[in-house]
Structure formats: C-alpha cells, structure tokens
Image (cartoon, rainbow, N blue to C red; front, side, top):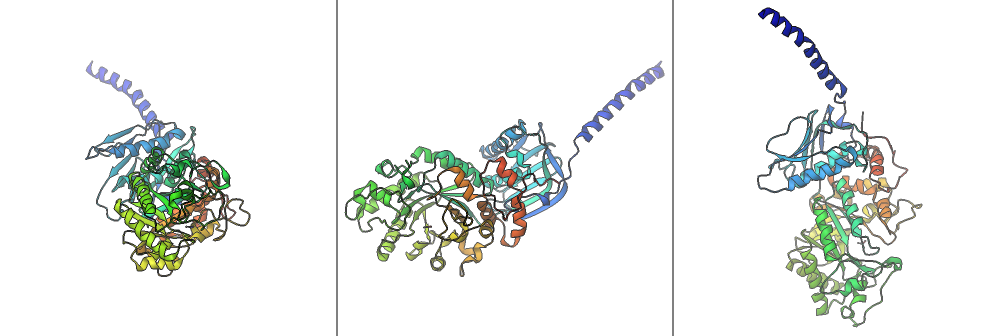
Length: 538
Ligand code: ACM
C-alpha cells in the first residue's frame, strides 16, 4: 500500500514537474537579454570612461525605481527618482513606482544611491553600473545623480522621449560608466531683453540644457530695448521699460513670483540661474523709465532698434548707486546662486575713467549683498576682487588682464559660442558680425588654448550666449541653439584629448531621432551624417 501510494505520487508529480520546467523555459527564452554594446552608444557629452559587457538590462512593467534611504531624512533622492519615473512613464506606459530602500533592490530594478568620498567624481560626477539584473547609479551628490540620470535617458532608445506610449523594448546596454566634468561652469545665456520669452519657453530651454548636462542658465534681463524683471522699489522699470522689444512688439517681464518659479524649476535640475542687469551701457530701458537716472534729468525714448553702445547710466550721480543698490538687493534675494552678472560690455559713451570708477563701485555693491560679480571681459579694466569673474567674448587682452588679476574666466568666444551667429550665408535668422559658425567650427576649439596666456586653471567654464535681436520664438531659439549647444556641452564636460570632430559628428547624427522625439526644431546641418532611425542598437 505504501509503495502503491509512492508510485501514485511519483506519477502525479512527473507531469507537474514537466509543466513547471516548460514554463520556466518559456519565461526565460521569451525575453533573453539582448546583446548590446555600451561602447557603441551615442552619448553626448561623451563620458570620461566606459566599459562594455555586451548584454543589456530590460525595463519592464515590473521595474521599480529604488532610492537609498537618506540618513538625514531629506527627500531629495526620492524627488530624483520621481524625476526619472516622470521621464520614463509617458513612452513606456510602465508604473515605475519610486521607493526608498536600505539595501540594493532585487533583480529588475533601478537603484540610485549616494556614496560620498570619491574625490575624482567631485560635485557632479557619477558612476553607472548596468547588468542584466540591475541599473545602479551612484554619486557623491544629488547633482551627480541628476547628471547620471541623463546618461540613463540617453542609453534608452530615442522613443523614450515620446509623450505617447511606444512599443519598446526598453533596453540599456550593460557595462560601467565613470564620468565627471572637465569644467565646473557649463552654461547657456538667453537674451530675454531684445525679445521677451515667457516662463514656459525658459523652462523648456532649461530642460534642453539639462539633457546635455549643462548646469548654468544666465538670463540677460535688461538692455536698451527692455527691462524684464520686476523691481518692486523701481516699478516703472517694467511698467514702462518692459513694455516693448526689438521691432516694437509688446515685450513683457517676469514678476518676482514668476522669476522665483523659474529659479526653482532650474534648481530641481541642478541648474544655477545667473541674472544679468547690464550696465552702465545697454541701459536705455532704465533711462527711459526714470528721468532721474539721466545726467541731464530727462528720460529717453523707448528704443526698438538693434544698435548698441549709445546709452549710459550717469556714473557720478548718487541716485545711480542708490538705484543699483536697490536692484542688486532685490535680485540677490531672488538668487540662491553665488553670482550676479552686471554686464559691463560695450559702454562706448561712458568715459574710460568713469567706467572704471563705476565698475569698482558696483563690485562693492554686489559684494555687500553677499554675491560675487560677473561681467563681460571689459570689466578687467577695473580692479577686480579675486572672487569676481570675467566673461571673455571678444577681447584677448581683456582675458589676459583677468589672468593677471587672478580672476577666473568664463569662455564665450563670439566666433565659437555665440548662438545668434548664422551657420552660413544662407541662414535666415541671426547675424554674422563675429563669424559664420557652422557646427564643426562651434565644436573644433579648446577653451584652454583659445586665448594665448589663458589656460585651463584660469577657466571656470564655457557658456553659449544667444542674443535675440533676430530671434522671436522658441522654435527660432532651438534652431540657433541646436545642434551647436550640444557640442559646447561636450567641450565643457569631456576632456579635450577625448574629443574628435570626425567621431563626434557621427554621434551627433544619431541624435536626430532624439531631437525629433523631443520636438527640437534643430538646424539639419549638411556637415552631419544624420540618421533618423539610429538608436545605438546593435
Ligand atoms: C557682447 O556681446 N556685447 C557681450
């Protein structure tokens, strides 16, 4: 009886075992990891170092995003996890729940963790390890994790940028990346004075900067044609000075609440806002708004043309410095970052001695509000504090003067980084007073050798200004910025020895599908081998 029973059990067990074995086979064979080569992916900026292991991680409807439980109770990592989930949800349609955990999660998940103490990674570096079972991103800081998230994003197929559910599969090539930036300052400047751009446009630009690991947005908030930031103690600056723009359109300005919203949006992407109030030249909008700012006590007319160099604040009036103190005080209160930009360029109708006196005084005002001054390279005529920064755009002697004064430089050579320069003589938008700047020219230069006497240790970083005399809407901003800004981002991040135009242009060409998925109105330069379908898949 006992043996008959055992036989019965054996015969009943056998088909069940076969069944489970077959099920296991099916579940393994239906979705084997796809071989993928991490070294053939098209990352911009190119990472510092990378090891490929030939397989892939697959994102599925069961994937969760796990963040290391913070020791200090902060929810910053959870917010980063949520940022990633929000990026990946629309195209995948997966729920991607975000959870805190004390240990590395089980297979099939994404894990974000802080691991302080890796000096080489610094403030913004990260390490990414991708296996068939886990994506692990680690960094010293949340900012480093944020930069690494952009790498994860670029390792997924371009369709990940779609706002509608796409078929997938959503695979990330396996291997390891160890990456950190060459320069601490990697920025873009947007002129919202010549033409005004609203909060939504600025936020979209911030998102595009974040995608390429930039960390600074410099807003040119005032010029002859318009004053764009509310200053509560001088309300006519915006009421009158913000009421027009180049060509006579209606202009506009940011209320302090709107500006604070932009600052916060940028902060969530680890991007620092640098506000610029240009002075003593480029000040007609202020001079038209307040008669008292003029040496002759008469307000000027509003200006909607594109000439430069005709306006100046009255440098020997006490009211001028009271005005500047009020403006810098209100602006500093809106600025969590360390810098206030005071312009200082093209003050052609300010006497040289007056200009020097003025910049020295304004530097003290900026410092009295706990900030460091940045100015265009002409400010090196003055006596600069070591914490002040000069932004090189045209004059090599000024750049050398900065080095002599022990002042750091932001490199924005007009012939390479000015995004309003036309690509070639057929470009309908933009100007060409500095040069025609095709995509190759914008890429083929090195900040550390561009000006004789200025080397890497003198340089804070690279910034790409977009002046908007001829630029009126977001599509036009994107057309002039992309793809050149992607190349500038690589110059700021990737070591010079790792950069090569022939290799870069192929990688950039494979970003076409990403630009299209993100609806970026980029310039399809004939120098680039564009590849709509390419995604780096093998
Ligand atoms: C500048 O282009 N005037 C800084």
